[in-house]
Length: 433
Ligand code: LLP
Image (cartoon, rainbow, N blue to C red; front, side, top):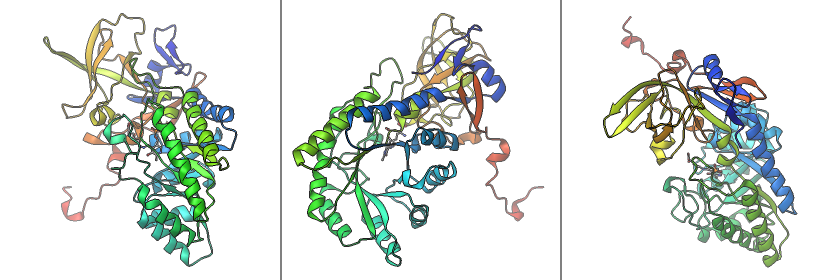
């Protein structure tokens, strides 16, 4: 529910701000994050759990979707916890003031430095594999400290999404295989420093079906009964993220409410069957919280007509600020923000500015006739855009602004050329001047 419509200048307004004016003020390209949309999605998750789950629940924001101080602070103020997946994301969350016990640290190859950082900070660790389990047991052996952990399991569930973002099938690099789990339970029962709170699984991302998550609930709840045989009383069940969002009119994902309802009903039913108490239920949405809350604004530059084949309209960004089209063949749509009421007379390819033929933001966009200086926006760029952005071709990363009720605030400064060479070292002998 992006609060976007044309204003009396015939410009697109987001969060009450004129997009063309934002570009004049903050530069181009520009990530424009609508605070109300983000907060609404947070509330929809929490309200759905309140409605459909009789037990305790916690929603974690998967900050890999977009980690920065402002977003961490907004989701924490909505009483969500955070899923982090690296020392850098953990650091960002802590710097934003998120309480450590609300942070869950994932990752299939955490370094010893990251493990020590997590233990020191007091966050929860989602343990992925034997090396990590053994490293933790060793790190904790000296003291009397206990560390709260969850175990990541590979549930063996297939879902239909791009193969790079599928994670629940058996051939996945993440988590303990089902045939390992009992040995893991036995190991934990012999290491009291490992305070095993529960188990976790994440089956994939940008998923439109509900059935895989129903299947997941029953597979996971069965492990609760198994753990009890090893003297472990698990109390948290984290079912990951994965709810898809709408990038084009062709996409028809379930609502947040429908997705949460599926998880809750599945867990309630499976717990009844297994005759175990309801666990504290967690999930970790990323894309469905922040994805639709952001648009990227670009300024139109050169155009090229290849007769009978294609009309290219180039913009001032591309694969460095949104690597998803070139990585996953993701499809987006475009809006002519500077001429909202002009007829959509052209089918054009929106080309990025990078030195790579595949740097095409959209292959077929319906737009009015545009000129250099026009502003277009691509909706749905809140998830996995800034967080996967690069400096390819030494293009500085764009700025991001937070818009709400007609006010815009900078949340990420635009990178400068000085920023680009900040980490460069030029050995004395190589200096030309
Ligand atoms: N939990 C875990 C353990 C995950 O690995 C992920 C996503 C999430 C939660 C959040 O999933 P979401 O609700 O956002 O679907 N870069 C790809 C997506 C990679 C997803 C990685 N893991 C893309 O741009 O589509």
